Image (cartoon, rainbow over the protein chains, first blue to last red):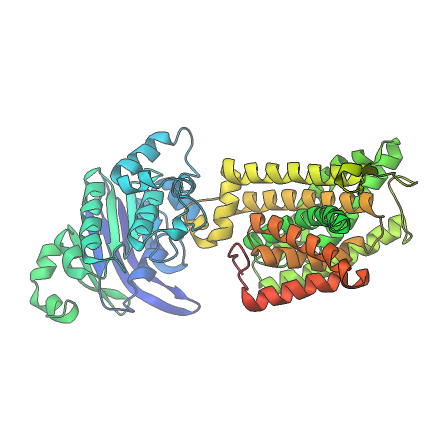
Length: 235
Length: 289
């Protein structure tokens, strides 16, 4: 069985300039892969390129062994890949439930079991299902964003800085949720600013800098690596 | 008192016409990000299509409404597919200018086919009901129908936007285009539905205006400013705001005749729009401008 998602030697950017200069990524369905690195390393760009939001100039993206380089987002969703951007990741004038329904737009058949499942994962959303999401707190919005992505029953969940702007308690909660989601057999590929906490739960860790891979190992091994610690984790 | 009540009735009628136009303008802006300048001429063409239909089959004036709505829904989708669609990947300002051109084309076409004289659906004067228990308020049956049918159409738009999958997707796209794409919402289908609703409601506005006053090739173009004012007042990109905006502008325009000459009615709409843009540019319902 081939690996769930793999990116090989990606070159991509905006206009004529490559931001990514040879990025390699991989994640299995039972794994949490975490990308860390300094600002401007190209972490979010790498996520966007994989999801088809950015043209890949050179390199390959494989999903279950099949080449899907530059596949459009709609097709990625159909294949079971869900993506949660860092910002503007909800529909603010729609209610919680409507946001979730939009996540399942391409799903055929009854979506109620999926809704029930997401509400089970995020009980707070169930209480507020009729509320417009624009008025909710940052933590609740992040739950809506993740819930929307989970509505397609994805095999891979891509998260761009899911804990950005959250309080320490909510950050802890978010990492617990991500582990729960992963335990259901959903592969997780995420970019994280809270490198220590994220790498601690990562089965694969990637350290990116200036658009390329710098280090690659299991999360805990990267945390223990003095070179990584000095460069990116602040000693 | 009696006079205020009478103007309120006229205001509701005008408000209904403006709301029908403003819903479309607002939705088109929310989803395609451009001010659709041909919307007034969609109204005009719709009104004349209705006229052609009722005079061809010798039907009563109200049959103009369904015929105009159906015809304009089809024409709006066709214009989008043939022209606007090709310009969608360029800047919104190009779409705006092209819609301006479309406005001129449609108006000239109407003038070419039906001439530039005033026309009416029904000749003769309709006698109003006189409601003595309301201080002798005069109520024309047409006015009652215009307000009732507009209300029914508004309820239908509301049910579509709040209950159906495509309607919710329309609101989602208006909220956050990128996320809609990421979620896999089929943009082209939503855009097509936007034109169907926008075109049909513009035609309804045109027929109402034609029934209330008369048909003329400039009827829609001169109504465009208050329609934009209504859409901006309500919060552009927000169909519910457009309804409220239409009513506020319509009633204000009619009420203003208590104080100033009726020929300044468009100026009242313009003044409200400018004040709103200065004080609260996002509109009552916090639009996406």
